[in-house]
Image 1 (cartoon, rainbow, N blue to C red):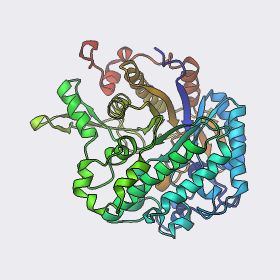
Image 2: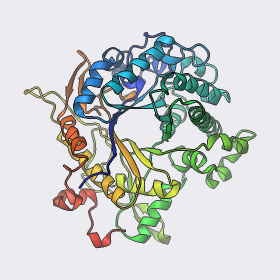
Image 3: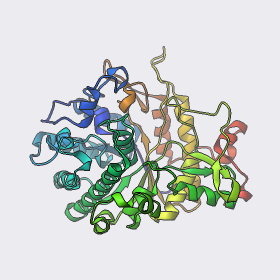
Image 4: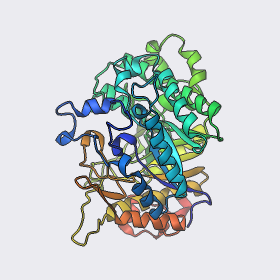
Length: 473
């Protein structure tokens, strides 16, 4: 059992969640800085002011990555660290920090994968209308150009935007994330359109200006329905549900991916919300749909469905006492089979798992170790399904575990620990967890240390959704 030769093994982080140093390099404030200062918004009043102090400790963090054997590191650039006001003047000190980080990674034999936007929108631009302002796409392209001009002589791998469903849905619709707005759907439609335009302009900027041949993608949330049984009718019903738009909110796949990858808005959007699109939106599709090299998928959990009346997918009954993470998310390892398979079939692009992991209840034991067998088990189960997807013909180029470090988990503050490396936030001590050591062995063996699905024992087989070989699709 082994992953393909050249498969990319990595881990990821985002700027606001780990960097700290909000007053360094001339960095301007972001919407998250303001949001964290609004009473009651973040658990315990936590902020990202210091986070993991990555700006001061990045060399030690890279050394940890090298020790783990990571082949790649996905990180985001802080827009307000590069452009304090979001547009106009560029901070030389901010760009120089990312220069040093990239050089440190390359010196350690680790390939940098840069994400341009992971939610830390410049506060100065928010005060000018933020994503509702039609100029927001051009602001983002201006920022992208500054980063590309500085780093593309060494950086080849680019992700434009991370999880648009989340920063729009939680940040602008339900309000639990920055900037904390509760906007009506007509304005959400305009925001989505401007974010898609921003992606397109940034992707075009990278393609036209990169000094080394770029590899470009983006990383939406993958919202996946998995069939409960390996029945052709149930599989097709799950596929249809995965790409359906059933509610007037942003929690779907096709509103975001169809314009980017197919150059069209889904008919469900045009028939229900299309009247709210700005004038000239049809012409904008030429900007939005740019050549893409891969589709990133952030996959943590999925929903299980079965056939209902009329051969339509209906939610499967939830098992009593079902497996869940510390965040309360269901553990559904088959999402790394059906997600890549369904998205690859629809969009015909190589898939990269840009995020996958779990929040766990981790602490330092009396022996000084951080034992997290649940994270090891969770990751092993998901990787087993990912390998099966590859063996069934899905083109998957890499896997990035979320996250490298315990970090600031947005509205949850520091309560949820996702890291392979434990962070003592009082002292900033780093302790690689047992999962980090296990993942190192996965990387070293290219997955050969993972037991095949068929070798799992009874309860494991149930959780994995195991089926006999003759029932394979």
